[in-house]
Image (cartoon, rainbow, N blue to C red; front, side, top):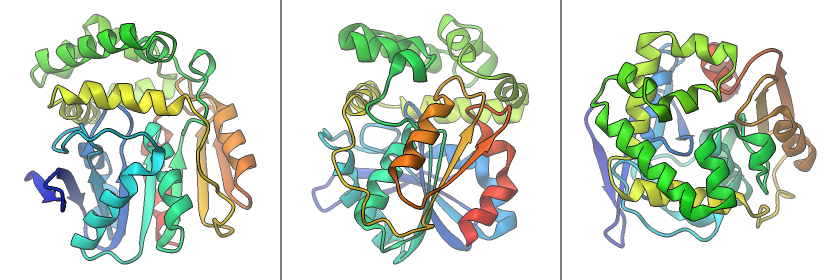
Length: 290
């Protein structure tokens, strides 16, 4: 896939990647990852005639770092990219930490969103002691300086592996990440192609040293309550998917978000974990196509 970059009016760069052709979908990648997560959805995008666009948030991948003090600070940049791509209406999809930013976009621009799906998304303020099993995230939220050191070490190990997923998973940081996955998640990771694509997306997220800043910044934003209202979101616009066995973002998060947003649709997947979205790609496509 060729690197694709759009230059914003203030000369910052925004990186994006596209898979498939058809109905447009803007994809919000997970925290500590990148636009390349859309490669995990390439097959279903092509099969279901979806044009899924993954966009690097500031500091990740190819996007210029720019401080964000509010969850909706990225919305203007995202709209500029959508305009450049010729999208006037589109669906949105957010996974894990990316779901938080998908909700922030939906609340502000619900009129141009045809459908919104968030998967295993944290409810804010985020309780790392209950909702996250990755050690660096707990450190970030309890002791940001120590957490930042842990994220830098994660970056070093991802880049040191130099494309070899087995090398990274064998490192201390890789083993810690594996502890945060359910049994069904580990089955996905046992697929070498899936694991390689996920590793590539994470490594790309740390292409720049500023990727560390981006991860730290997002976790700090997750410590605060949502600073906007969901009241204007139309009924049946939002679908929430939640893996029952998710160790990274436990089931209470999905239930609480559903209770917070009137007329949203919550589906809980029994026995499934954080990566449930990638196990039900055809079902996901059907939801996005509505």
